[in-house]
Image (cartoon, rainbow, N blue to C red; front, side, top):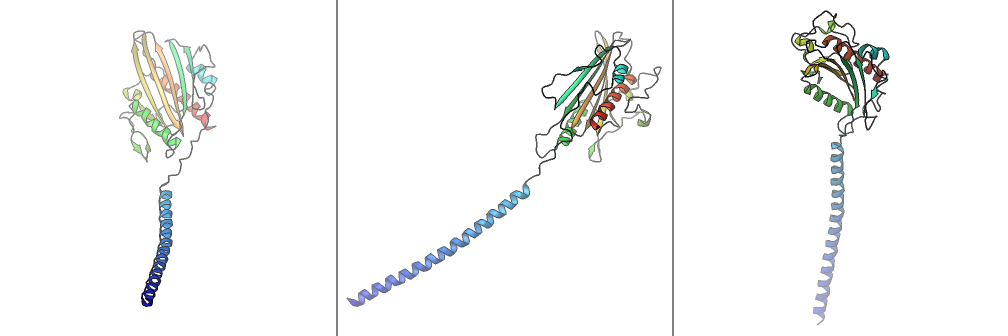
Length: 269
């Protein structure tokens, strides 16, 4: 009986040693596994960090100027004669930090004259797109809607000068002076074609439209320009009750550009 007991003791000792070795191996494996998991997590975190896109910078302009006071009294008197309210009528908007406007109405020998200005501060809701870039996109959309011929120039939205267009150096300046003499033709097709302007702001275009109504003719000259994250629209319109007399395009174009230049100066201050 004794040998049998010794054998049992030896078996128990062997099993005990085997379990100890297994437990030690498991402990080592556990330590190794924990280290590998930490390394994998760190690598994943690093990869995610590398993919993080920095937020685009905010736009240059955070507020807009008071619109009715942004056009000089001399300009209003010149472009909108006999205005009932020379101070202008402010547009009704829900957020004057985002959009403002003003309008004036006067009388000329031909009929009613209207001036409308609108300023919009563009805000991008995409953190990867800056306010300025969003404003540039909105400007290009407006230009396309007006059929302005745009081509990429230096990576920016530029323009191809329409065939037959006058030399920019001889065109009315951005201040609106040097309009053609009153006795000259009202404009060739190239003169009234939608086209990009050399200023004001970072990009600008002009649209000249003659519309016939039962009550007469009206010419609408619109200048749109972008300066940083602000889009500005200037619309100068002239009605003519006599359908045989077209409102003068050169005068209206020069006037709209003069107002646009004043607004650009206001924003630059």
